[in-house]
Image 1 (tube, helix red, strand yellow):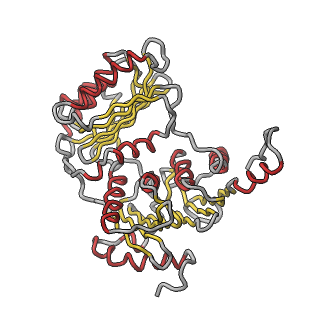
Image 2: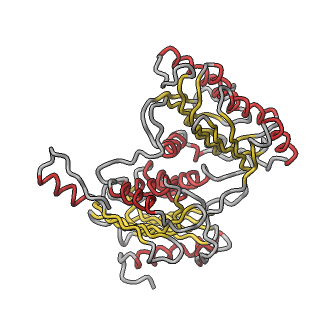
Length: 447
């Protein structure tokens, strides 16, 4: 790591405190044959685990295994990571970036994946086919340029962060009258005929992590309490909660399909629910993931009631499902122009295509957008409709893309990650908890 340079105003005591709390980070490619190991040793503070995982996922790394322990005042983590194609991290520039970013966690909050110098529009409301078409049509009509946006849908609700600037000036929108007009018109679109009470539109100039904020928005919207309104693939996460009274923890076990950013999504929700993760084990094999977290409330107490357990289960299922990639993935690459998004979304709507998730970005005057789409009830879109839409937008601009392979084909599937049925997983949860407590040195035996 780079040698630390001290500001002139720090005295020797302040330097000592920083030395003691600065995370020690080691990135190692020798200790594991199919992944890069990232080891972090630091003084513990609330939220530092989420910040560490945020650094890794923001660098497009996939976490294949993780071991977390933070009893007392110290925090020790080991992550086995690869790139999204399952390769080790060997580029020295990437390794230096990871070391530097993780090395500042304790005293400098992470700000990557944030959008600066733009106005942020936060939207939540009832999802419906054509909603995004109406939203972007309003923004185009008001001469608002969309620079970046992410859209999630879950259980009939939609949350979106849209980063915009004024078309004429190219600067953030600060005029109060124009902001009021934007808010009023977008709220009218979101409310429609059925969502007068829960639709929300918020304008902000604050810098925030986009995906972290989307989790907060959907959690506040209580999407976890609602029932799905469209068909899904049926591969729902299995979540169970048990109290480990011997050590005063609550144990959370999750078995689900593996994907990028899975651990980050779970930690976001545990943090929003004001739980602290003291120990954790994450293992992936094939396309499955098994995660165990030993948690307490901020005040040090475990989960105290069956109702609270059920709420944790519902919230964690929602956290995993929000980013689940339902439908066909379409990628748009085209010269950016005013109204481009509105035109694309209108074409989707006219062909009965529902957007379940979207990632919109503009780089060097070129739009790079990703859409996950289904039909109106969640079924795959007919191939003829997809081709008609591509013909309308441009065959060379809109392409059908398969989901990226984030799994290492050479890695063997762990025994617990291959459980065939929910019952088998649930029966073994108690022994899994005990074994992990033993591996972490928290109990003497698990037999």
